[in-house]
Image 1: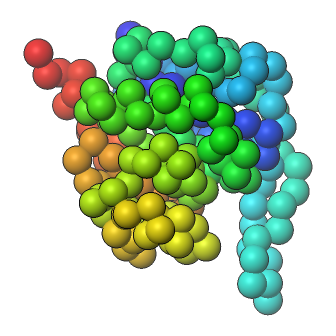
Image 2: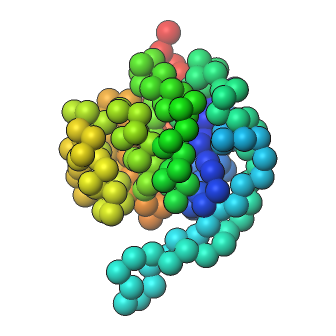
Length: 187
């Protein structure tokens, strides 16, 4: 069964992560969880309470990484999924993750990014000339790194599919799975 590399770290958003974690196998794709180290990670929930201008963060579930970034071989995976939450704020400095991300783009493999995942794509210099979406507070990351920000639930540009937040999971995963199936069916 082909696999998708799911990138997480401490403060990864629960719904950004767990929806693809369970949804991708339903369509025949194993999920391999990758992080800075092979250990248990602490996820968080983000919710924007009424009257707040920003999200509130509360503790969520835990998820163990199957592999450390330094041990990932991009060629072994059909696609890459960059989860959101606050984790990308520090993951974008991981040289191994940035190289993994570039390899997926160089190979034209499907890449999905939700919410703050865009920060990893920006740091890897993979947004130039691409139309993308992300959570509104990360739009600057997209445009400063050469992307064209669009406020839409889901945007597909070539091998890249992006979404704003977990609220867009249904159309987002539908598009990502279509890209994975098309790439996996290609000779």
